[in-house]
Length: 430
Image (cartoon, rainbow, N blue to C red; front, side, top):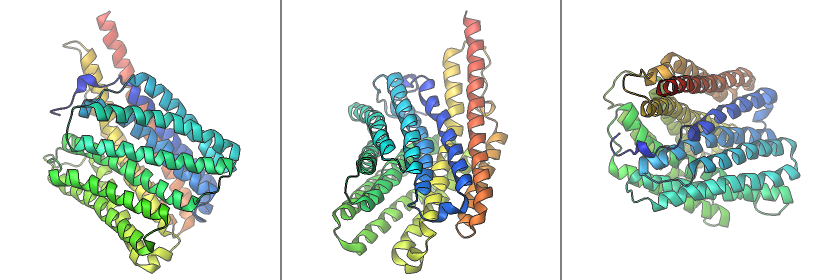
């Protein structure tokens, strides 16, 4: 933990507001999946499929990632965020309301709702990204983590611009190349924003909490830069309609190899950890890295093997591996380390010598983490199998709902424990 500025950590309510909201959207995604059943596999372009994707990517993932970013930026790179409480309130309200409106717009195909969702999401996330990027630019810190955080927030800007463009096109019936913009929007949302933020978080939490060696300097710098550049070139080829299918395929394969290299490096470091006993958060991260390798392999195969490219289930397999396998696994593992640690840190800072503060393992017992891990793995496995056997979507949806609900309960229980101990601390100081 050397070099981390815990004294600059924001109030605990800043990240927790986002952390506690994300799993609720996950539950909503599971209910939508249960309602749609096998019809969800009709096409990835149906209203229900798009709503499901955004419930996970925007409702679950983005909530957790915004909260993590507000915590990491001041602590890891010493970048002071302007009025974190105000930024949190504005972003959280806009993001939550915007997500609800956006999902309703997809499900009802209402132009009026798309017209409302575009400014809600654009203003709240645009202001958030601008404040965070300004803080990252002004900090005198140096290092790979800072570089990747800057690239990730730039990726968020690109994702947001493309997303609001699409919502505006749906809302105001603007003629534009929607298919091309959608492909690039998805690539930046998952690769240019989410994947880069996962890298930045990994550079901190994998060595710190999993007791591994640090990421090799050459790969810590080279992998995110290469991924960002490849994604940018691929996007320009798509939007401009230049270079032909083979050029776009080559850049897609190169990007998949780069992101796969990050997964392979992480698994290699985890194999060298000082603590050999496995624990839930390590297994969540390991699941994520294996899923990332599998998704990269499918992307590469889809570019060069016609049978894989023609198979209608390939996009669903890649989507579930990336959304559930990679990002939901990483976020669950991250929350199970960050939430107990923040509880412990803030209670230690407020307490007096001799006052007993629960340790991190008491904040969320490992037995409860293991249960959610099993539910998460069951939902992922069943959903992947449901691509070939669609009837499995029903037990998959039930497992997914249970996983998100249990994650929410674990976070709520940890928050309630923090409040109880805080009240005890306040009574001793009265």
